[in-house]
Each structure stands twice: as structure tokens, then as C-alpha cells.
Length: 132
Image (cartoon, rainbow, N blue to C red; front, top):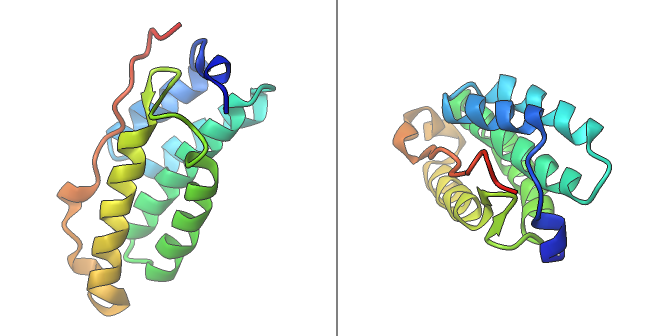
């Protein structure tokens, strides 16, 4: 993706999705980000898609769904790896790093012990809502 794709503001529903994500409301964050993804016509729609997949990873982790967390993590990487570390004010590089740490712990615990996951590893997304 080009830096030009990263200029501009986040869609209002993407902002709502980020707020919900950071409040730990991962299902609702997914829904808001999906709405932003569906309404966005430019390349940024893939950024929203990657972030909404991250919300689903966190949701699966909180529900101790090992297979779901692994599967959706792979999808999230497809959409997040092509973006620069900062895009539309979102710290995408930090999100990728945080997701990697989560998946390392998920794999270390395995399906039988995932319910013991340390929720403090589910980090908020850092972003600036006034990015232009």
C-alpha cells in the first residue's frame, strides 16, 4: 500500500470500532469495523478488514476458542502485513506486534489451557482520531 492510501481520516464507523475494541467489546468492534469496511471504497477498506479480523482473534481468545484464534490470526495477517507501521493514524505495526504476542501465548497454552490466557496481553489499538 502507498502512503497516499494512508492519508485521510478514518471512517466514523472505524473510529467507533476502535473505541469498542479498546473497551474490550470485540464482537461489537467487529460489527462497526465491518460496516466501515463495507462503506469504504478505497484501499483503506483492507486496513479496516485487518483490524476487524484482529477483533475476532481477541474474541476467540476470550472465548477460549483455540482453532478460531489461529484461523482468524492468519486472515488478519493477510490484511495487516501490507500496511506501513502507521496508517490513517492507526499504529498498525504495534497491532501486528501485539497480535504476534497473543498468538505466541495461545500456541504455548494450547487448546486445553487457553482458558488460562493472560488477558493483559490483549492490548488496545493506539490511534489518533483526528488524523488527516
